[in-house]
Length: 111
Image (cartoon, one colour):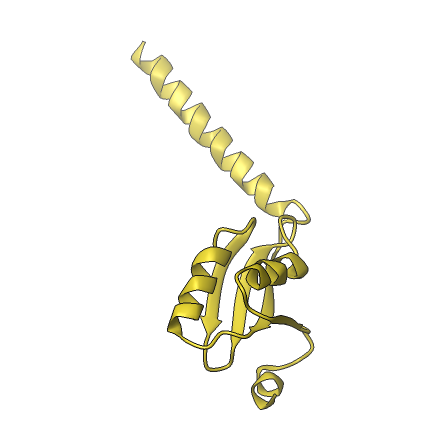
């Protein structure tokens, strides 16, 4: 009886590990980063955006910077899009502009 339980646990651990590897290698599940310029003015705006956008589908990380007015969002590309994330910020009451990937941090700070 005891060996049966041990064998079942080993099978469960092995299959869980295998399925975890196969999920990560599937196409379309890559993590992307989008930078969105938002009309936030203060620390409360920053917190509001970070807390609310963190609950959007596929979002892995959100960092809002009040000084540069840029929200950097890491998300799963198969779960969400930059346009949907910008719209979610707009629904909180902030004007937004998606920053093209080609622009560097230096270009963004000059604007």
